[in-house]
Length: 629
Image 1 (cartoon, helix red, strand yellow):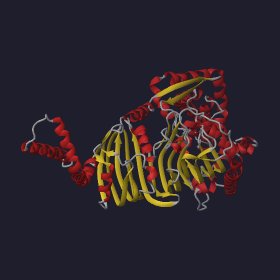
Image 2: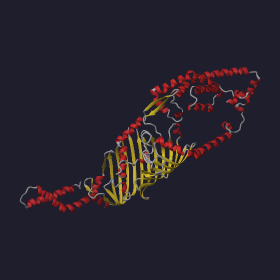
Image 3: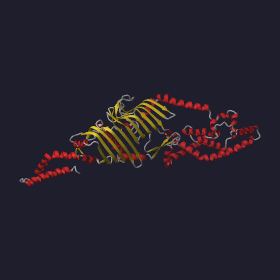
Image 4: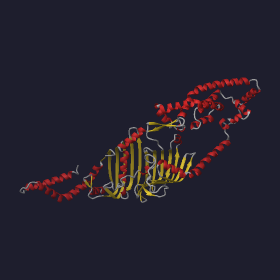
C-alpha cells in the first residue's frame, strides 16, 4: 500500500478504482479487530491474512487502525480483558463449549484461551454492526462531497474518462479467466522453486543434522530409550522417514526389546492444527520384537543404570514389553492368560469405563500473566500426546521364546494411543505369520483383536487360529501349563471369544493329527479322576482327534464346558479295560479283605462267602459306574 502514496499518479490510480462504501466499511471493521487484539500472536496473523486476501478497502484499514489501537491502549484494553475473564474463567456454563472450541483445528492455534484475545475479539464482534453502518454512511457522504468538488475540473474529466474506458463491458477479451490474467508466471515459478528448496533442505540437510537433538528430546519427554541412525523430515508433505531404529528397555540401557530397518510416518495436518500429534498412517519393515530383551550395548546413555521414565504413567513403548510378566516360571501360555486376566477383568473394565467418563469432564487452569490471563481447559483423562490411526508392519519377527518366534509376520494396528496418565492403548490388532523354531516353520498363526470402550462397557472380541502347529517343536510355549506334551503330531486350533466387562463367552475347537502325546507326570490325574497316562493312550488312538469346548463365567473364574465330558467319554474304554485287568484280580481280593476286616467274626459258610464275593463285586460295579455316567 505504500506504493500508492509515493507519487500523485498512484494516488490518482487509487481514487480511480472508486471503492464501494461496503468495501470501505469492511476495511474499518477489520481495523477495529486488529486494534482490539494484540498484534504479536496468531490471531493477528489470521487477521492480516484477511487483510491481504479478502476484497476490502485496505486504505481504510490502514487509516483507521491507529485510531482503534490508540483507543485500545487508552483504556479499552482493560475492558477487553474483563470481558475475556468473564467469558473464559467465570462463565462455568461455557466450560464445555470452550473445551470443544479450543481443540478444533486451526482455532486451537489462535490462542483463544487468552483473555485479551477472546475479550478483544468479542468486543470487536459486538461493535461491528454499528461500526459498519456508521463507516458506510460516512463513506457515502465523503464520496458524494468529493465528487461534487471534482465536477467541472480537468481532474474530474480525466477520472470519468478513465472509468469509462475500464468498464467491464469494454474490457479486452483475452480468452483467459480474470484470475489467470492476474497471475504472474514469474512469481508462481519463484514460489514453486522456493517450496521445493524448503522441502529438500529440511529433508536432506537440516533433519539429518538435528537427528541426535530430536531423538534426545523425544526420549526426555516420553521417558523412552530410542536410538535412530537416520532421520529425514519432509515438512511440505508432513512425513518422516527413519532407518536403523532401536527401542531399548526403559529401565536397562543395555537391553533391546525392538528394532526395525525402515519406518515411515505421515502426520495428519488436522491433528497439528489441533495441537496434537496424530499419525494418520505408518509403515514399518524389517521389524524385530523381543519381549524378553536381548543384550545390546549400543545405546548412547549411562550403562547399567536403572532409569525410571520422566513422564507420568507408562511410556509409549511399554506396550512392546507387554509379554514380560513378574512370574518368570510360567510359559507363554501361562503369561498370556495372566495378561488377559489383568487387562480384561471386571475391575480393569471398570477402570477403562471410568477413564472414558472422566475424559468428558473438564477442569480449568488459570495462569496469571503480566497482562491478562491464560485459561487452560484440561480434560479428566489427560491428553493424548501420541495417536497412530493406522500402523502397518511387514516382514516382522516376534520372539515368543528364546527359540520360538512368529516370523515373516504382517501386523496391522489401529487406534494406538499414548496418554501420560493411562499409558498405551490399542483398539485393533491383526497378526498373520509363520510360527518358527530356530528358523524353521512349525505352523501358522492368525490373530484378530478388537476392543471398544463405551460409557458403560468394555467389549473385547478375539479371534485366534493356529494351523498345523508342530506340537513337539512348540513344547516350550505350553509345557508348564498343561498336564501333557506332544512327542509328535500337528495341531489346529480355532477360537472365537468375546469378553464384556470381564464376562467370557468363548467357542473353541482343537484338531490333532498324527499325534503322539505323553503325560508330563505319570502319577498326575486329569480332572482329579482320569490318570494322565490313560488319557494320553486314549488320545493317541483317535486320528484325527477333534475336541470342542466352551469357556464361560468370568475372566477371574472361567468355567470350561464340554471338554471334561469329551475327555471322559474318550478315556472311558481304556479305564474300564484297566479296571478289568488290574483290579479284577488283586484289586478285588484287596477289597474283599477290607470288607472281611470290617465284618464281625463268624463261622464260615457258603452263604457268608457268597455274600462277601457279592460285596466285592458290588464295590467294583460302583467304581466302574463312575465312567458310565
